[in-house]
Length: 69
Image 1 (cartoon, rainbow, N blue to C red):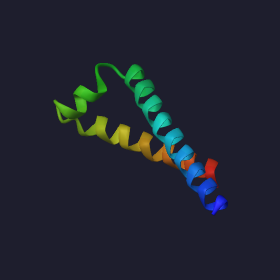
Image 2 (image 1 turned 90 degrees about the vertical axis):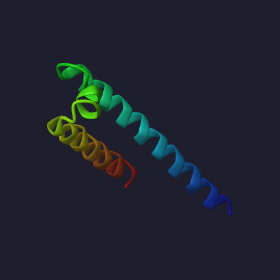
Image 3 (image 1 turned 60 degrees about the vertical axis):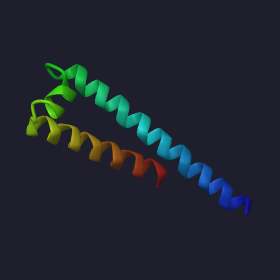
Image 4 (image 1 turned 135 degrees about the horizontal axis):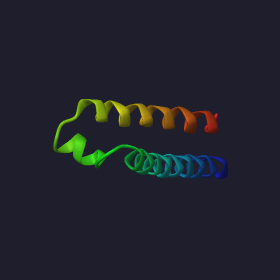
């Protein structure tokens, strides 16, 4: 049972790290792109900006998965 609890805690820690890394990547991409990225996606319905953030999310997911593995 102790091993199960340790595995759950490890999974939660990696999930938290992944969410923090995604948030940080979003902020970095928002700084690097002209204008407000969230406004471009939500208000102006800019598909290119949504594709950019989607690709960043996939890349961060691959990096976190590789770190866990």
